[in-house]
Image (tube, rainbow, N blue to C red; front, side, top):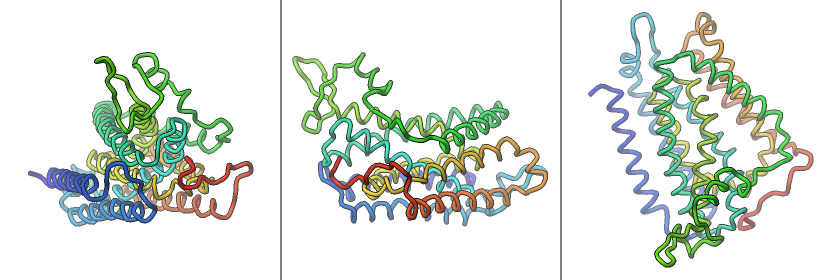
Length: 336
């Protein structure tokens, strides 16, 4: 068993233990989560990611030896820094997801006591779909490396659109293609069924609003994955980094939702910060061949990490001192 396989094994064990803790000890069925609980749970997931980063750092020399081929040498700190950069990128994108999640819960009138369970199921579905997407993406890039150029161009285009978007037309879950599809092919009811996803009436299944919300949450995350997965590939091409950074960020999304749902509307300029990062990574992917002739890969990773931290932190701090004209009032706890 090589070092990469050992790291995968450790990640799998940590993931199982973490989910058992989250499901069994940190969560109770049909109960609301307070800000204090959300803070502790967010701290738990972030520290877990930090611990995994430290573990990769310790295993860095062995991982670098396995990655180095011929004249292509991988620095001992390259993969750990790639993981940290990718995790921060995914984590910041997760914050951007939260406002959409709030709109979905509000549109379908989900009761607050059902938030934790609905989010958990939606996130677990999102993890499964992301693993599938990442596996397909990694396989395609391994066979057709020129796809990275398309990913780079897509990130530049997405980042530009995100930066210039005025947000005049907010996302309406009940006008989404996913909801239209569910209405067309499934018998839906406009209530939560007392916390159930599927009801039985005369032997036939009826799908509640909670079922609809879970499906839309997973679908929305897949849409966000179209940006995040290419962005991570722009930071690292190692499947280990791509898988672990994505899954760690998604796992912490539920606690982050409860921690930030009352303050997410204050991050008016976070979208612009993320947009700049996406454009930066896209340009880097497009010019990687030439950039690598002048700047070593470990240095590129360090620069990427600096840009991500600067843009995300800067956009959040700037949001605290500046207010967009016409920004809606803050969303208070319990108001959705």
